[in-house]
Amino acid sequence: MINKMSQRTERRGIHVDQSELLCKKGCGYYGNAAWQGLCSKCWREEYQKARQRQIQEDWALAEKLQREEEAAYVSTHSSSQTQPPHSHSQPSLATFSKFEEKKTNEKTRKVTTVKKFFSPSSRTAPKKESHEGKTPSPSITRQSSIETDRVSRDFVDFLKTLPKQAGRDVHKQSRIFMESMGNKKDLGVEELSECAQDFYQNMSDRLMNHFKGSSEKVDRVMDQVEKYIMTRLYKSVFCPETTDDEKKDLATQHRIRALHWVTIQMLCVPVDEEIPEVSDSVVKAITDIIEMDSKRVPRDKLACITSCSKHIFNAIRVTKNEPASADDFLPTLIYIVLKANPPRLQSNIQYITRFCIPSRLMTGEDGYYFTNLCCAVAFIEKLDAQSLNLSPEDFERYMSGQASPRTSDDPAAWPQTGSNINPVVSQIHQNQSILSNLEKRQQQVIEEANTLQTEIAEWQNSVAREVQEILERYPLEIKSRASAIDADNVEDDRLPPPLQPQVFAG
Image (cartoon, rainbow, N blue to C red; front, side, top):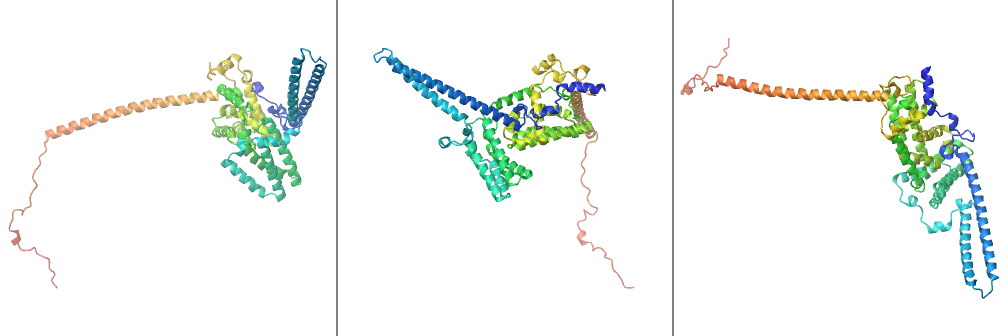
């Protein structure tokens, strides 16, 4: 009971209530920190309302400025006409009037530009002047990569499997969207995201009409549409130079590197990496979260997050020998992110948020796991001493690198979760012991090899001495070869031939 109470106390800094993952407006969908805790649907509604208010305010301000400038111009012009023709101030007033007229014209032109910029139609209708005077985005017009060519061929082959009218409509709308995105390269990434979301919504509505409300078929087509357009747009919309995504990536990487000393025990992670299956699941989870950066399509990046999360749940299940809970999942996900330090983590999260089909982030396991990942990153950014049950002084010393967490022989150094020894420190000591034993064995082998070499040399010398003594004691005498008995008989050719056996008939 005491252990359970201590675990609850330790989880106080990491625990996130599941209701906090949902949209703040209470629609029941998953929220996102990038959308101020709202789901994509509610965020778009709030964004559109705020944008309309901003447009109206800018219109009012522009009209007010224009009226003030026109009144100032009329007042100055009328006062200049009432001056005597031979007045000394006439040249200066005339010059001032021309200056005011020029200034008014310039401001009127700027106000008109502001009106056009904030006009709702300016976002959707491409301008002919910009299309004719500017070259398309290099990322779209440059020669397609092998992957882009493959995706384009796969998309065309997929469209051939659809009904003829639906396939033509999807191809036409996709081509129009790609051309319009090529003409909007000067827009910010948020405006491009709005264009993509509008396209998804419009395409989904059109497909609903084609397939008579079959959501399964619509989702299948939308998956292919997203894969096609985002593979081609990836280079121009992922981590663009107009955003601070790269700066956030570096800040997150430095933050994770500074937290390299955080251990499983500090996060109360219910995972035992000494179990082979658990260790294998942890490695696979780390691999999946790192592999996310290599994918181009938002859906594929989400698939990496989902696969990582499933490996985490498996590691928890094997360790606890029972199904994992949401309270166990989040701290383990934080631990995996700290160990993996995924490349361009913030850019990938922003890319998914901006250009993924919104329904994926609002519902389903993909949306749930992605929301938890956003929570994990937010927790890492705000990680403090209280979250890890450390004193502020120790936390600052660990962060600055002045000290490292003490070894497990001090019970007060580590939070306990039912075990008296920290598994990480235990593993370190075990590795050190193995290395020490290997060093001793290596030294012993070297000494025995030197002894054997010395013994072999002495044995060779002793054998040589014994051989020499024997040779000296019994010198070698070489005798001539013994000759045959009849070797001296020179008349052997006169001897009769040897007797041959004969057979007589009885």
